[in-house]
Image (cartoon, rainbow, N blue to C red; front, side, top):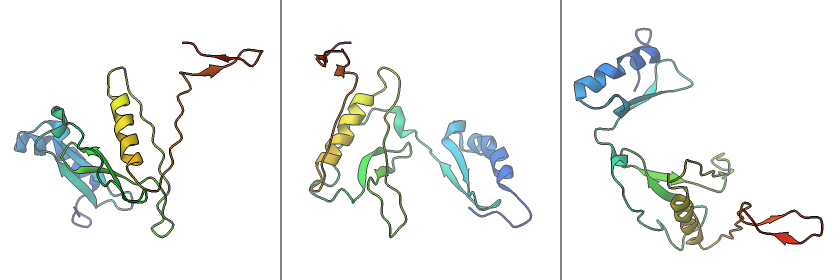
Amino acid sequence: MTLAAGEHTNDDVSKVLPHLASALDVPRTAVRYQPDPDSERRGELVIVPEDMLRYVVEWEGPSNAGASIADPLVIGRYDDGAPLVLWLPGDPETKRNSTHVLIAGGTGSGKGDTALNLLTEIMSRRDVIVWFSDPRRSRTSDRCGQEWTGG
């Protein structure tokens, strides 16, 4: 959205978000405003009338099996139902940096399933090699150079 020049600022929008949520009868978290970092009068207003994350939705499987790893990966859905898209390799033409992924969260939050879904999405592409390491499962540390596996 673009505000009237000299009349309103991004701060004005942020102050009215609770009132907008009340008018729409949605939770306060359903109304968000992301100011444009290059402008004091432009930003993106997002209203999520139904929280799509409230319900468990099974992953649909690889989004583009057989395609290139340079094509976007669909790894889930946002709370408004829009696809959550990820590009891993960089693209010098569009000046997009390569993407690194960290999956973190508490016990039972779905890190393992998320990692497996992402790995399956990646492995479904034709031009990819995956190196996988789990340092907690295999530790080498004793003086004799013998491998020690322990917890």
